[in-house]
Length: 183
Image (cartoon, rainbow, N blue to C red; front, side, top):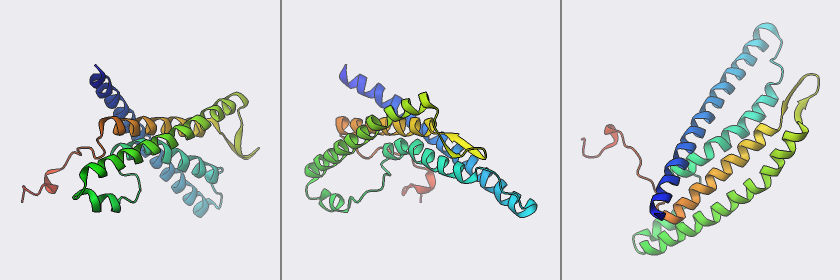
């Protein structure tokens, strides 16, 4: 029963992480379009696109927190695990336990960020606070706060699943050109 629940939660969390990553990629593409329009507008018409600076700030934060859960899922979060790799062959049990501890601490930090950010999202939703230059270009704060809260909450769930299942390195899909047997 518990194993089934963990498997279902893992599938849901993985699907949400992949979807969020795809949304982050779409934000990257939108940012590329905005920046290109700004460059062309500056060059041809000597008139920059209003709000480019604000949209870049807005987008970068959204990209990071939309893609964070999938980065955690595929174990590509930047960290130094040279020591763990060094002792893995001699003490695999110790290495596994240290990885679980690191994942648990990471889950706690992600939970704390989500816990602090969600009330900020609610406040920004109610007050409709914005950033930018009034009269020129403004964007509301609440979407950024929502993405931070949801992204860190999902990353927390994925870290917790890694602790519970003791699976730190997922089985990645390999393409034939990377298979050693194909040569």
